[in-house]
Length: 359
Ligand code: TRP
Image (tube, helix red, strand yellow):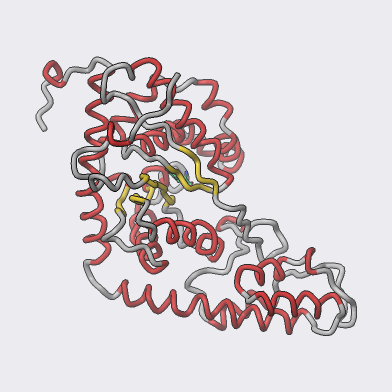
């Protein structure tokens, strides 16, 4: 089976500048709360780098439909969508060179998901690790949306014809399912010219695992161990002050082990190479205490957060900015997704002529 398909097969006219053939990059973030430091240092930094390369055409969206699987409160969802957009913008993604949109603004994605669901193998959905995990986390709400999650995610990816999907480790299985679905679709329906789907590549983010302040291995919203992007200097210090360090270092004069300390890991993301070396040495020799080490981290953290917060506040003060960005994004991505969907529909034998579509 050949997977060697040009994205041009599947892009509507004008979506990609002719001749330049940039790679289509696509990723989404669920709108389930304000982003935290781990999101900024992990996915956001990666997106910003990708978005600045002329070799890429980037689509970044807010996966609001996916958020419904775990966030049933309408008021919260409506609040979180703009927050994510502001975070994208404040992190440095330029909405002119890149397309930022809300998943729900392109209804064709849902249609594509329904069409493609006929090629998804039930046992693959049943085996999906995130489904099992969510079912454990919210036993009172094991809804069909959770189960269907990888189908909709495949439509998110295949609709705009993504070549590259940057994701963290926890999403690898989902992208693999999308690849698998595209291959199965191509094998069954992709014989006609222009009917094939692009089989995307996963762009696994360099293993960035931002540890939690509680000593846990991952900073996570639900674990309550985060530094938030809107934490001011005082709040951030209060959190750092009580954050868990090397638990074997009980007294100031005990030497510590930086490799067993989450604060040290945070240094590696936020501090200069010299500072990282100095705090490591100081910790091992007990020349500095955890408090001193945290002070250095705090200064570097605020050097990262303060300009972000200032940019974000400035963007948030522009009244219609978020809705303008989302409308413009939807306007740009919709024809691409609609075109893919129309081709898939036709390839699968749904004739628009017979179903008398009004739009
Ligand atoms: N499932 C992703 C997450 O929770 C969000 C997402 C939805 C996504 N659709 C996508 C990511 C398509 C990449 C591509 O992080």
